[in-house]
Length: 284
Image (cartoon, rainbow, N blue to C red; front, side, top):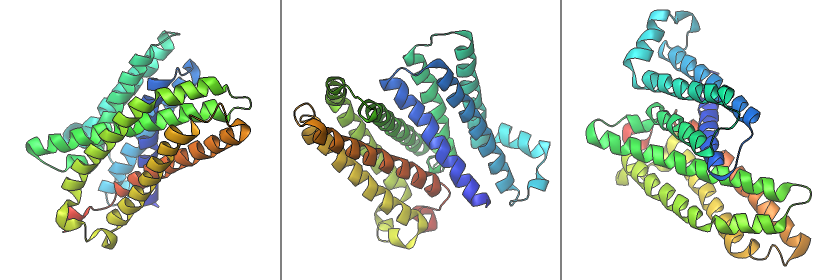
């Protein structure tokens, strides 16, 4: 049960913070929903920290103590990252309470910084020295790029799934994302290779099917390939034909974007699960 809770909290954190960053990049978010999401992110982070502390006691909540919590906050990388994340999210929440209008760039910066702190909760924090910073940097860029993609998908889904969508607006938005989308995919691929080199290695490729981490990564790669295929269809086939193909073209685009967003959600869940599993490099 503890493991399931940890996976759920990790998945929620990886969905909320990078997703908030992505949404802020591509759309204006109303003040009160943004405050609700920020407050929820604070709650999820706090629950995640408590679960981490319980896990360190061997799964015994009764063994928790103020001394242990203080030690985790003061002397561990995940604890310090948690403090920074809470401070950033609290600062965003106070800013939203104090100002009716907060620039999108400010929301994106707060969300990006909070997302960056999640890297210290994952495998990216396992390497020492300069190599560790490279791995952490790759993790951070990977999360931000994934969040940008998810945020864009949410915006596009909102444009085409409404009852009477503005097809010209949707076409402009989807076509305008082409350049940014290419950069996002390139960033995900490049940082994914860095992470794979550190966590799997050449020798670990053959062992992927034999480990939980490896099986999760295989499914993730298959889903990522499906997302790339759907994104390519959207860019080169469905978007150019949206204005000319009538209701049929709109229906196909709706299905494609929904499937792409569903695949993204599944990937986030898999990554949250993989963060609790041992990678082949460690297992070997």
